[in-house]
Length: 140
Image (cartoon, rainbow, N blue to C red; front, side):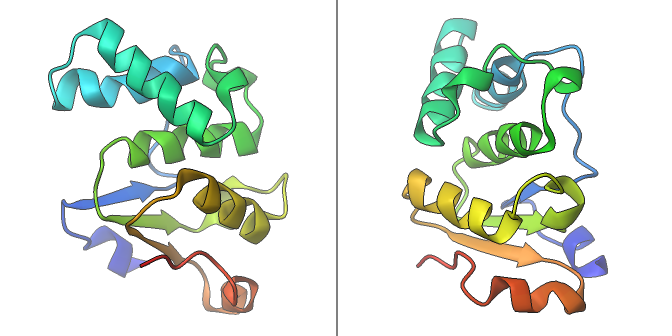
């Protein structure tokens, strides 16, 4: 997984080692990105975060804090946080370590279809899991 550590800064990542802030809600964790990186005000940042959760089909998790989330809800929050960056390349690092409560190749594929993202989604995983991704999202 050394390749993941060497990714350039213009890549958005979803990974186990990029935790959520446990004291914040899903909405607040996502809203931190436009608030601090793009200097939007709090109301606009929250609106953008809610829009992202709506696009992913998980609007209902907005008030949940990290300890109250299922692994899938935590993953959706991390994914929304990565997508709101607006980068053309998304890397998901070892999804099985994060998504042990759902059939994750299908779950990721469904989320990718819902986002209608124009960027590429790459999955970095252990070699023995590569067969799981024979139809994983690889958008143009």
